[in-house]
Amino acid sequence: MSNETNNEVSTDNKPSDTTPSNDDKNIATVTHLAGTVFSFVPALIVWILKKDDSAYIADQAKEALNFQISVLIALFIASVLMWILIGFLLYPVIWLVNIVFCIIAAISTSKGETYRYPLCLRLIN
Image (cartoon, rainbow, N blue to C red):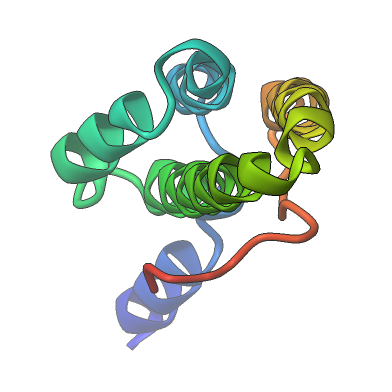
């Protein structure tokens, strides 16, 4: 009977479930930073390849993918608005917001924290 109690206690307290490993943190950090240069492609690749390996990587890759899709939609809207000259003002703002939020996300994930982008459409659940 004492073995069953010990087994139950040992399975309930797994530190690896609550804190991501260094590899997981690094992959999440690179995923967020790569979005500034390669748009949604790195996040999509990481999410497809690693979603079953780590819940942390899957969550952060999905978050990065949702944000980059939101940025693409905003850039498309700015492209349409270039006909009335507003898009020329929106393009640099969208570009700057993308870089700033991706850097903040990379810093947060390098510490092992989960990051949620503001102003992001959650299209992929």
